[in-house]
Image 1 (tube, rainbow, N blue to C red):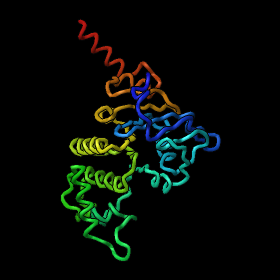
Image 2: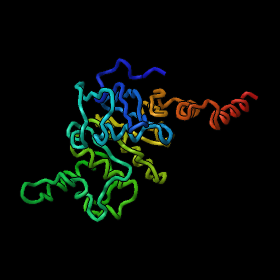
Image 3: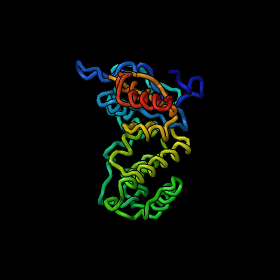
Image 4: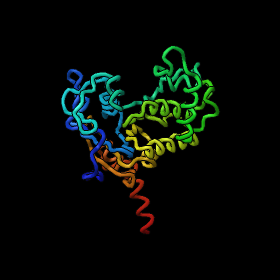
Length: 264
């Protein structure tokens, strides 16, 4: 399928021929990926498809064996997580890496506290409230310990922390995993608001409904390689076929039965 963004403005992030080997294991092979400002690109695939490896390459944890990465039109080398963050690529991993005994403000500014000699608690609290209000986040108080927040609220804090340094691209690794229906809706709404702020978002998820709800493009990985670029209008059957490599599966059979019923 052709890329719907082909011929659009210059992408913020551009990968061409990116490969990664761990000894004899080829984790990624000739990966191509574009991320534009103000769009959500979903990265989907089965377990072992290479999603986590690709995220770690972009986060500076792993260095690619081959290929080129361009950021804002310039070739870059992401040789450390600090370098990726400095360029403007932020990552929210699945474990969130929050300190549960600290409040929301302390978690947002962890490692980036304000004040050269003493913590400027007032300015940090004001900035925390401002950012959370811009995101329409449903946090009862910025002085609430993270341990007392729900799963959706914790995800909100983790995403807000990644926005604090105003990155160009944000990667979200399974942000709705293990969340209830209401909390999932809250996080998906937050992802849309992040996109509306002009950030490029890379969303990694196994949940096809979540992906189709917010993604502008869906990039499928299979066995460490690109296996198609789709839109939210793509049927579940087509996505499952691209992810698994099997055109005959439970989804396609159910769809065929329903079509037969309608025709009768």
